[in-house]
Length: 215
Ligand code: URA
Image 1 (spheres, rainbow, N blue to C red):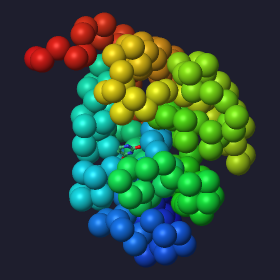
Image 2: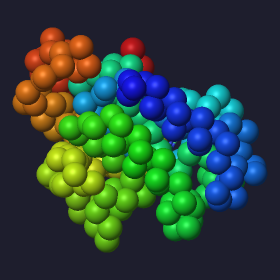
Image 3: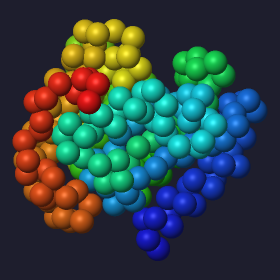
Image 4: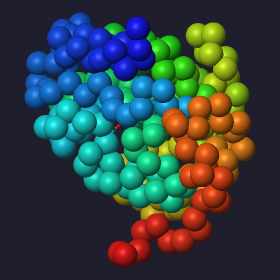
């Protein structure tokens, strides 16, 4: 069975999931989006209002920033996979509870074991602490670590959540600098499947231009 079919099955399980209370107030499930064979997976916290309305991860203000950051390192959204720790929106964008995370993350686990990425980019502390508990994002952001997780060899890059960058200019600068590091790292990875992580795109050096100019 193809990875695409397997991911669709996981998404349909998410859609009918009532294992925690989050589904009650959510309008739509947000399982994830992107290339089923992606080498890079981005993991956020949970859907916000726009994501809940459309069923698509990172399609609001944070998503707009994420798109700009991806463009800065010549990555197209369609060539990566984007998902979240919890798949239904926590009411009023509150933090997901530990119980909701424990209940929901088996879906993330199944997604990752299906995609088998080489690189995980965690956006914010909830995604980081799913892989490495008790680590502070303020200390570890931008530092690539190799981890063994569920039999997969993963390169994990912890980043601040884009929403934190929208609230604080200094954090935004950190995110931008960390993305440049991510871009250089991706350029060093041996590409076995050029179709999923386009060689030509990754061989370029990340742009050093000002991401946040109005053009
Ligand atoms: N914030 C997240 O963590 N995930 C989304 O999908 C959107 C905003």
